[in-house]
Image 1 (cartoon, chains in turn blue, purple):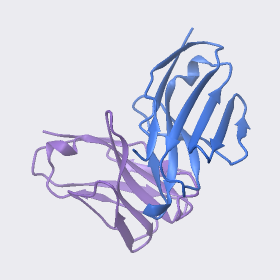
Image 2 (cartoon, rainbow over the protein chains, first blue to last red; image 1 turned 60 degrees about the vertical axis):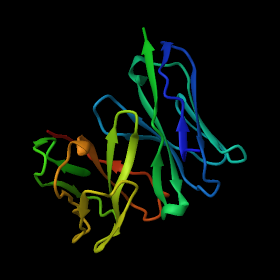
Image 3 (cartoon, one colour; image 1 turned 120 degrees about the horizontal axis):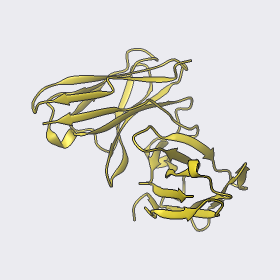
Length: 111
Length: 114
């Protein structure tokens, strides 16, 4: 099992839709979880950290399920500007805490 | 505040040539790292450093060297470029040594080896 797995998509949704991405991770000892956003030909940028109790930032909600070892990202009221690739990131405690990136899920929001 | 600065943005090398990708950060971050990103492969860790004078290998270190003589700088050296090293390279830094704080990325270097 790969360390961090994501559905590559693409997810094609209309403006205003709600869309959810899941990500599974293999190391039960992982302690830190993030969602990054990467625009085409740009560097990844932090979207939000994921906390145990779940957290929300505007239209974005992140959840963590430690028992099943997955994290999720929910985007409500999608905007055209949300079109990007979303990267799931987990720290790998066995590698001195380096961050492991999923391959990303591509989202395309259409008018 | 410049954050993480990478140079050059683009580079074309011939097989066998060597070069150094520069990375500097002005956030006084202890942790710095180099990733490469290839289509379908995601971001893979090449080398990392948890502080000045300390470096270690990541997932794909072969063909690359690093050094960390100062907190600010973390150059990546390609010893003898190969076509398999054609990729986009990202330097990143974070406040924490232990992977609990997020990474801040530079703009990337697009390298082509012919």
